[in-house]
Length: 335
Image 1 (cartoon, rainbow, N blue to C red):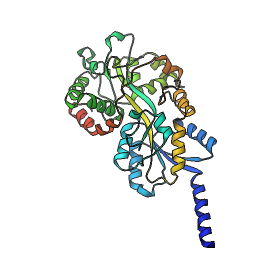
Image 2: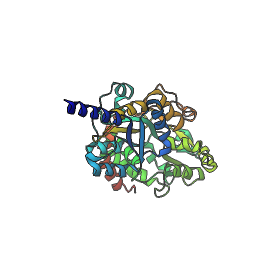
Image 3: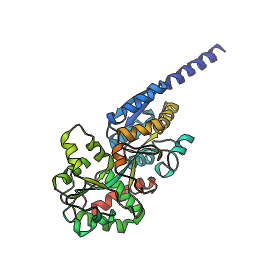
């Protein structure tokens, strides 16, 4: 009897110790997530152990670690990586009334294995001294001959571009999307290179007149401590594509709780905290990302860009069409 009681006491102690920490693998840079994780610790007393790295590296690490992984939660910055995690069997189903109530169904997995936490859109930016807003329209219109040698964009290896193409495949089919990609490539002002900030800078200095970028990169440059970045960002304007059609392409930062999680309840607590009004306001005001909750006020910069129509395509489809998107871009000559 004493032995049974001792075992029960040890189990309770062990469970208590599990509840005092949660281990997070994050593809988000530490500066963009740690302040929020620290606030979670202050509120709950649960310590967050953070490991950051590139998304693909973290996914590979989790596959190698398997059930022995110390990680409880994976945070990523694109839905395609979340789908890869699901396809690799890394995540577990989570039943949370709060998550299901707060996050629209098209921004979370249909089996509740991953959840969107914040939103960004892939938009057109342009030089107002060389481009009239009346000239702009849909993503499809970027293949117009008037944009010959005037478009800048990142390479096809960039997952944000892959997700945009995957969304077009889901909406338009492979044949029409490939025709679009070929037309887009014909209008490139230069070979794709650099990140989204580099495309913004290229428009600012006249290398190209328009570019495809994610919204939060432009917002981040406008609030940068580097004067050159602010100056470049102020020379361009943002345009919301497809406002007469499906709406602007959306993507997410998101997370999933791992099957290997040793601190499952603490991980669920953290996930629910990240969709709370407080956390969503932090995402909106600090990281300049749109909230999963439409009732949360955005940052002043995002508000200045006005309201827009968002494509409500289920983001789960982006991962499903990712491989097809990559092959299609290669065939189109989008390097």
